[in-house]
Image (cartoon, rainbow, N blue to C red; front, top):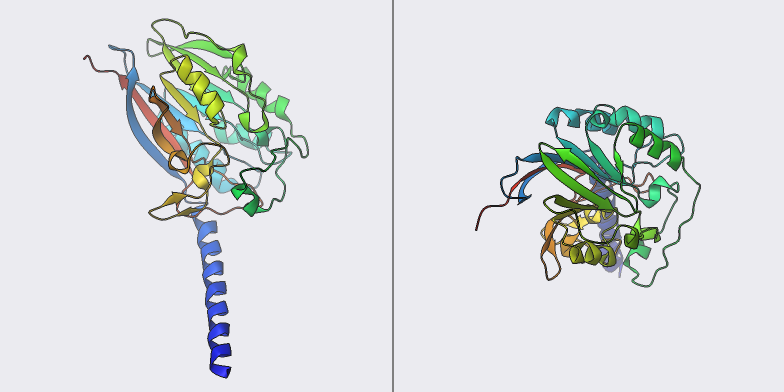
Length: 301
């Protein structure tokens, strides 16, 4: 009996130590910022290449000096175009910190959509609710200075793609970009931008949360590439398995990185993002990221 109790005690202590160790590692990995690089042959034949910096889910607070400095360093990649797929904010006073982090990037051509955390401050949540398929998503919490963020980005010349669209010329290529506001809190209205993309343009779709209903709409209109974020790549992943959840209806094997969507095999890149909620500041087997996408011309058949 005493031997059994001793074994049980040792087992509990071992599990506790493993949990503490995992949490400690997760805190470290959440600061292990990395830059992914990927080349995609998606531009119209004969086009010059375009270097697109995709940033997402920064979740910046004013005290996150390390993250702010890392975002600053991304300007050294010399992208031609920057796309932000939402959740820039994580604090009532975060807009000046976002501007500080993105100062040089905002001097470049860019486009953006918003995420729920650009509207509402983060709050403590039970992480196990993410496994519930029937959970109700509510737009709630302390309001954040969304209008200030939008004003800063649009004053810098970035395209606001929240249920909007626009065109811009990059390296001689006409980019027809359209996007939606955050589908996670049902602020998306694809009908306001639906229809054929401009002829002879590069058709770019942008959204925060890659819900199937929005991706299907982009695919129906023959988008050449869709960029999204929101999933955090699963945030806590199992090595050699991947994400446990995506926080949307996209399957786990599309939680981050490049994949092809639907019958048309529409190219899509889902960023694992660079931040976390301040209430869950860990990542496991899913480093925070930005991605430099080198878009090149399709090859002649």
